[in-house]
Structures are given as structure tokens and as C-alpha cells.
Image (cartoon, rainbow, N blue to C red; front, side):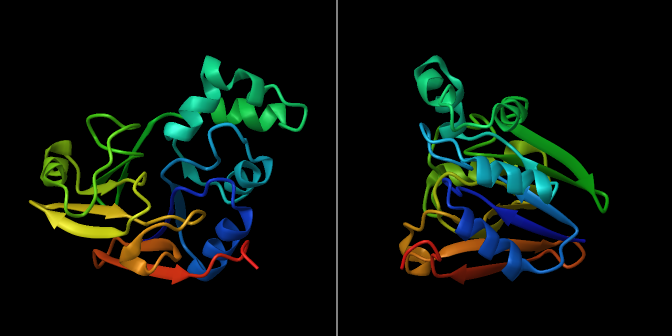
Length: 195
């Protein structure tokens, strides 16, 4: 099975569309949170995630907009209330069994799905092996990672909307996980929203 993975879109519909196009035919799409910015809901991005039947979890930016602090932004007349309600009904974690293996997705870490930044050099990365899963998918750092940690393949696709990582020369990116081979393929691309 080929699973397309995006994260940290931050309202960049052009980046998301380019990622989806470049992935080509995949069996499932996963979005590891931060589909929009904390006080700027994106009807276009959320609608597109619905269209492709993505498994979408909430990140720290969704948490902020859906909190009392984000009430004014959420009540804007430009926000599609049905899309907002659909977003509100998403969870902070997603789990599934695929090809006999367990996959868990969270925005930041297995122990706190919304907050801590775990980069490829972070000592805490080794704790992902304690998540009790074969595949651990996360976002938050905008930094690509595919690493086997004691039998857990930890994957961060980077950002499909807000490039800021030096790991891939500040390019947008997405990833494809092939569950038959265990291979993770990253795809880096320029941000189509920047002229």
C-alpha cells in the first residue's frame, strides 16, 4: 500500500495541491495537523482534505483556533461553518492497522500530540519507540525524517505549506510510505504560492 503523507500546510492550498499532484496515485492520504494558521482558518485546505478523504488530525494551530482565544477568528463570516465543525470533530491522534502493522499519527509526540518539538537530532526521538507501533507519523517541526528506532519507523514528511527546514534547503515537501517495502520517499518542491 502507498500512503501519501503531508503536514503543516498552514493554509497554503497551492502547496497542498502541488503535493497531492506530485504524489500521484496513492491508496490513502494522511495529514499530520496544522492545516491552517492559528487565527486564519482555511476553507480551501480543509475542503481539499475532505475531497481526498484524508485522515486528518489536529495540531497546535487547530488547537489555538478552536480554543476560546481563537473564537473571534473562528466566528469570522469568511469561515465556512460546516468545514469548521468538521475540523472540530477531528482528533489529536489517529491509529490504524495496515498490512498487519500498526500505524499511529500525532502532530508532535506520542506522549503530547500537540506541543513538543522533536527534531532529527533530539535525544527524545528515541522515546518514539515506546509508542507501541510499527509506524509513527508526526509533523510540527517542518523537518523531514525517516528513521527506524528499535523497530518503529518514525516519519515526518516536512511541510507542504511553510518551508523552513535547512534539511531540504527550505523547500516544501511531502512523503510516501510504501508499506510493502517499508521505504519512505520524500519529494521536495518549490512553494507555488511564492512568485
